Amino acid sequence: SALLALSLKRPVRSVAGMKEILKSDSAEAESLASKNARFGRRNASRFYPEYNQADVFTSRAIYGNSMERKSYSINIAGKTLTANFTNLTNQAHGSVMITMGETVVLVTAVMSRKTVSGLGYFPLSVEFEEKFYAAGQILGSRFQRREGRPSDSAVLSARIVDRTIRPLFNHSIRNEVQVIATVLSSGEDDPDVLGVIGASLALGVSDIPWDGPVSAVRIAERKDGGGLVINP
Image (cartoon, rainbow, N blue to C red; front, top):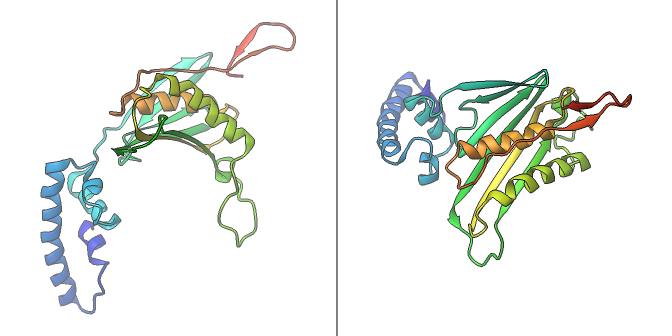
């Protein structure tokens, strides 16, 4: 249960002890609920950093999901592009899961609450993360549990997203903005195109000031001269 997540933070030596802990945690959960209702359930952990993940889990169990689950689809050159808005990353300001074929990209957008003084530029950071599991591979030594530096393809994909969305921001902003595109599944469709579309949607549904939207397609020419191909 939700209260059990709080109770597991302290050792339990008897059934009576468990009842006593659950009773105290119930009051703590009610107190957290009132604070969340005042400041907004999505940003409760930002206003109260002393609460750990178990407390955040309790507030979610009390209030439920903060984002409705919606799905939108469109056909582009015979391929279906689907945008899924869920509560998977409900602590981000905006997020979307973009799917085309077997390629799935999760894009999140966040902005810091505090401004950074002394900067002479707009602090935008765009990351494009490619994981081995997206292609169904686990590489490296069995004792090495981390992946290496981003590949050249990931760096170029991040630059594509950055160069597309950066001109549409107000460059007088000094709050740090971070956009992260994570490839969850890699199919025959290129994830960088989905990253651009996902970044636009994630920023669009957030409260981050941005003058979008934007979109992207990849265009190729057939070798036999038979015309152009959209998203080959």
